[in-house]
Length: 501
Image (cartoon, rainbow, N blue to C red):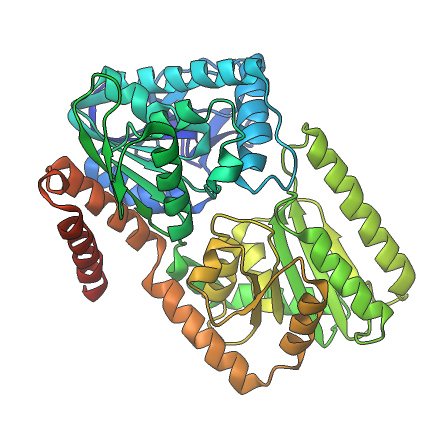
């Protein structure tokens, strides 16, 4: 486990800013505090860039009232931001996760609009911006991540106009009719427009953002270009476009090829009673994931006799999420009641209908689960991307397995050979489940080969490289000198040339 070494404050040419640092504080076997790398695609994507640029990462250390000096862990310079218990409640659990999260996910749950949350959000964003400005060298590149920090780009632009600033939104950006409900909608748009490049998961998200810009600021947009003039600032050209995030596909395949992982996959199937078909759902326990919809479809198939519990088992991994938020507590109760009802109605002494697990698993176990699963169910009601779908595909080096994928995920734009479904259409979902179970081996292999090519070609390294290439061009002022038509041609040429190489 990597230890942390404290470092004197420095200035860096490349700085990443996110709500959380890429490490978690743990206690080792000797009872000594240490730092372990956080799992996740963002860390994987940016770690080599950070090392090459000798960059810094600004973020919260994950615990309340934890005051830490900058330190180094695993070769990355880390700049911790302290948050009080009240700020965690108001900025993080409140505005970020009970206002922005449900609003940006099509109001599947009702957002809360509270001024005290907004005031905390502004204050914490300013603290992140101040800390970032303090460690950024003259002319540095700063990459801000996600919805918790939407005001940081403008705050940085005001404090440090010499910086080149990128922002990436990992979750959806809603249509204007939904976004306009936010009382502080103009402030958020102006906050984001402080960036030089704003990245989104889907083309539709970038279009939604550009429409909000036109409605709320009057700044003209054409294609990915936005001509920004805020207050007394000189006019700038901002690029807003899609950069679909991905995974480190090779690392998932390498794990799946290990004999111990394959042996574990066989153990999992044996532990389930060796059903003919294992279906798998892997999600955070979140109301956006459509967990109840897939359980409803599965329960109806059992009730209708179209599936038999001796033949088919659904494994549902639902890792804990935001457990202090009431909507999430209610969702857990609903899901666990549904699991108990279906198992009570259809389970036998030797076979459960649903094998339910309310905790997370390490990556090794997840890859074994992916190999054990004949059918992967991704039924999200709204999702920026859904990397689980890509993880499943990357793990299936055997070119087997069927992916059932909601059309309301960003992944559906890329993984078109999956069985695409509308999770609200329960009958359609049931038909897709039956089609997946009955699909001939040759068709499964054909679909999976196509999916795997896509996931390997457009991996997480390509995502970060594409974004940073576009940001570098903005830094060199290339976009400011181009007409909108030339700009579109340049962006397409750049990304096509990266694909060719």
